[in-house]
Image (cartoon, rainbow, N blue to C red; front, side, top):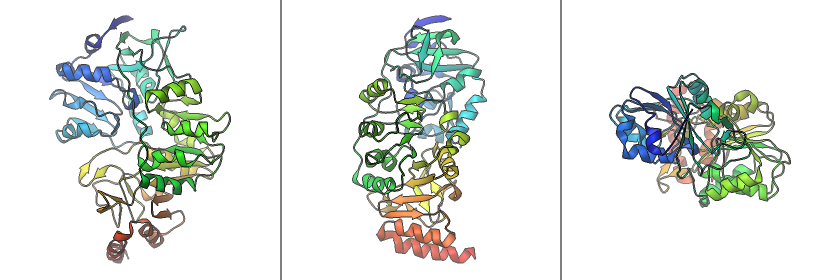
Length: 418
């Protein structure tokens, strides 16, 4: 096994025509992104595969490094919009579990893992991101550990033995952090409604977004909650300090996302177990949990209960994400519930997020996967409801100024259905 230091040593592993697994989400190697931006020709002819996340991985458009660089991914950071238009991005319409299966089926020429320095047993921790790295690692033809002293060694993160790597490169640099921003008033209002539907002893999943992110502060009067999610954010600390969490609960996530202070707290508290996406998003394991409550955001919903999480107007702005994995499992869970939480309007209240019918090129989440839709104006409980009951319930949670127009459009649409 070769050992070397610095960005040039890592860039030297890249070759034209090579397929490369690149950590994304909070595992992104920011020092590598900077090195590639300074020497983009090193990515010539390289095909990267990575789970890059909007709002998190906005540092670099990897597909825009050279005309021959390509990226396969499952969501779409805003910085990559131009490369998608130029057909340099292969945006795969897969859920997170589907992404894990896709990555597991690849024989990458090179897999990178962003890790801590080895411990006394020679094992390197994946720190704040255990989601996909070990999945890509197994089948790769060449495996390189990118050792970063800044990566925190979380007690129950997954690890990789240093002697499993073909090469080790020490590359010091910052890790992905995200400030814990106060939730807006609308998000807090929605989260309060969501919290009323979360029972004590629930297993809770919350996705990225305003209302899901605000839910944690609204659960501090609950009891014996267990985190079962794709990510852990600073709101989890609030629950721990409020005594809300189940004693000995198996709190399982794939990644952590927050400021450095939060990562340090996670290390000290040792409450969270990290796992691959196969475990965090696997249907059988999730569906077997009692009272699994899945809380996810959306850009738009229609009166059929269909959900759009990918399209902003006519522009494709994201991918399917991990929400559907949890939503389907929550429906199968005893006492479970699949919730979509979103503001009733967008663009300073000028556009309704509740519409009579989605007019997009694809539907992100089927109506059969949604139990409950919540806005700041109310709760639309869709379980057991037929076509017309659903429409009536959803009109009632739309912003009041849009309700008459949505109802009139529904009447026109309904007359054509039969």
